[in-house]
Length: 333
Length: 271
Image (tube, rainbow over all chains, first blue to last red; front, side, top):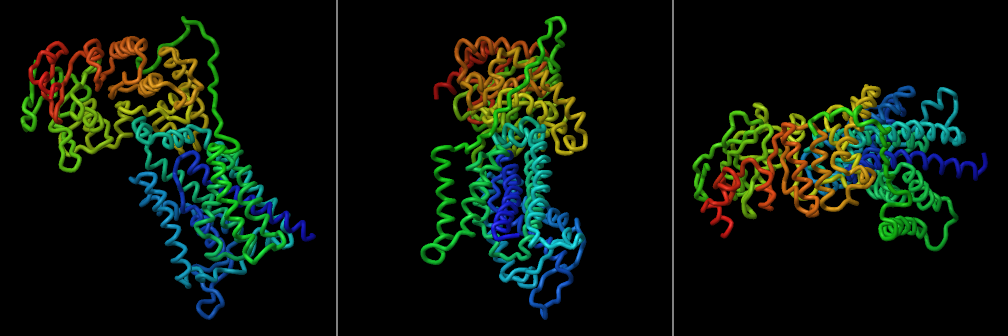
């Protein structure tokens, strides 16, 4: 595989991982109105969970890296644990941040959780090797077939896209279900939704945990490809990249999320990483973030509902029936 | 006419009103405090099946706070609330709704980015039928239920002549149409009691008469309705009994004709 093949396949993998993030955040924010400014933490915990069950037992302080719960577990336990870790952390965070708090306060709390988490993980070296992070993570599924993700990055890309397709189909199905409609009602007016019999706290927690599981899964997939994970990979700004993607693509529209993820994290953010350096060192990195910020602002200014806005779901008209055959409406209307 | 707590600030206990024994919703000595202010001060009201009870009073009388306490949107600091004989005072709003209490809000509360049709079917599904568990584990029952709910939504839309708006977003409706959507949403829940907070605000004058007729029909179907309304003509035409509040207390109750003759009521409206 040539340089271009590796380059493009890597972009496809990043696209897949970011698409999982976009799906998760769109479900939480676009459908349920939960402003998860701490999203990246749930991806990170999935990555760490997958890493420690792939790396094998830790060598302790004598080793070049320390971590908790070192094990070498086979596929698919690695990814299941990644998803479970994202879900469990979401449940714990959700229980104190989502129950009886206004939406703007929730967003602030989740952002603070993100900032605290990165400090704790960086400072507590025995947890996940501190700021240096973990390295040497392998791909358990590939090991069964005797292949590594590099140089088999196209195979890994296909694997990531297959998982994306399954998650995408499942989340779209759930979003169109009565449960998904309840989420949208909660998003539009919590008090009215509650007065209509919807348990707002339960809905918020459900969507938060489900989104956390997808985030954890995306972290597991990413760490098994790049082989390393450290606090540098999950700064709070990464969350805003995904938010920008769904704003640009279209909040509440999963096709819009695909477009947004393709444009923002892949084309705006990842593509320039592989371009030849221009100007002074760090210029490209800075321009990436300028581009992200501009994209969000321009979108809010000129197309506030995104490139592909949330679709209006037209009701299917009932077949004409005779007056005599029509039944009285239950509830005495 | 019964007049209770005539003096603002008095702690005299009020009675839920005539017919309380047959009432489906009974509030007894309900207190709502915001900080040190008693917005609702030992108020007792009741609604019977097939009756419309109007709550009137000057601004700041505590009418909307009373409705919010009944619906569970604000916590009461004291008093008892029962629905169909069941104590609901400690319940959350969704639990009260599932027992048959439906309400509209002072500020229209349509689901703005959902169509009118979706507003209706979501209201009907606002219980365990729309739960994640039901959707995932019982997809066939969910689908069948969805079809039944959709059929019912079309009936309600037809009844209120709102079929042409079915595919409009809630935010695209006029103020009056939004009020209608709220009422239709309540009906989709097959409630025992409806609490309507200023349902005529924003409704075009030519629709007001129709809405009054619709509410009378709903009453005839056996629902209890409690309505907070500023338009006294609407109250006169619609309500079987009127409760007048001022300074958080009930100052009078009885028929519309009785309470408007009441000197205390006249004084409350003039001050």
